[in-house]
Length: 195
Image (cartoon, rainbow, N blue to C red; front, side, top):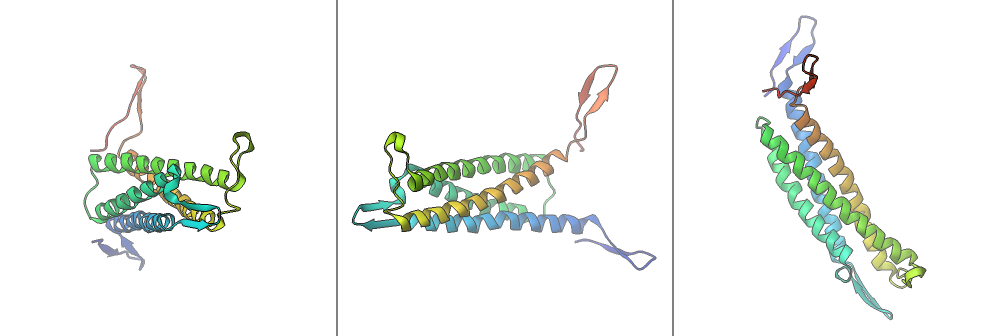
């Protein structure tokens, strides 16, 4: 735990352990929130179906929405696992920093791709495309489109959280390296690792 020392002027100096603990708690919460949002978006989309005089439609009828459901499920699982690991008070190692960096980047792009494709499908469902004779479907299946829109909006919030997590893991990884050192006699720059 952090050690507090009282200075002569009455102020309390908190050592770096408190900052590390606060940063770890913040990172853990930032990893937990997307889990809840992913599960919410996943449930909304899984329950999304509508039947009327024009026929029936379900999320599973469109590949983009199936991809969104799978991506939300994967991200929810990763968020839970990474939050549990981030919550453990361990020293940050290079392998741990690289693992978080790579997986955060991977999951950010996975969920960004899923929400982008789903947004395009929703756009076509609302507006249609006369050039390929794709008529607007949301006039006939309004409740379906509203639920799909809610799921996509929630997933965009997840993307924002993953972008922040990617920045944090990037900072934690690359702050372990020194700035490049220039050797004028050799004409090269070398980055060093802070052991």
